[in-house]
Image (cartoon, rainbow, N blue to C red; front, side):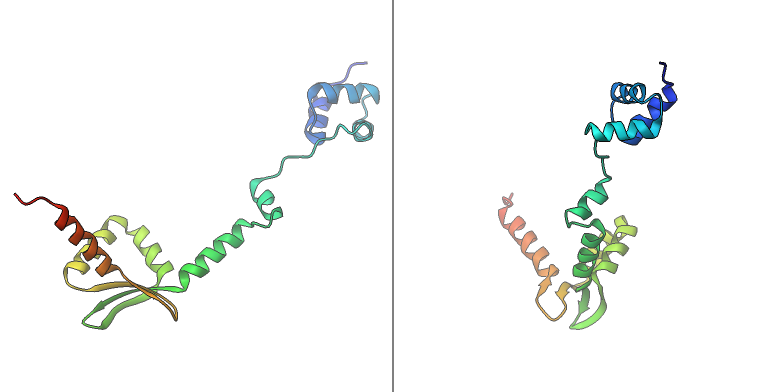
Length: 152
């Protein structure tokens, strides 16, 4: 009996089996697709369909969407602050600062350098907690660099 390539393709996709297995199943069942599926199932030849990566991660308890939410929530608990003489010139959530920095990338770097040269303090503060003074970190880094440079 001759089985059409179209039926083999359908069964191959549906049952996730090889062309040979699909053809054999169809030949053994007189070309009936439903019977061929049942035949493959009875002979334990049906293979699990591969799952999209997002579904695999969610089944493992590592939902990509949840991980993104958690990261944004954590970043949002930090504030990006620019101060001059103890007065806040800018105090925004770090998520907004990151988005603005990425959208205006080359200009945002220039702006941060200008702000630092004007003597402003750039800080990152966790809501109700610790604070990192980026200006002092930059100063320390450049101080170490100057100390390591040989004098000519």
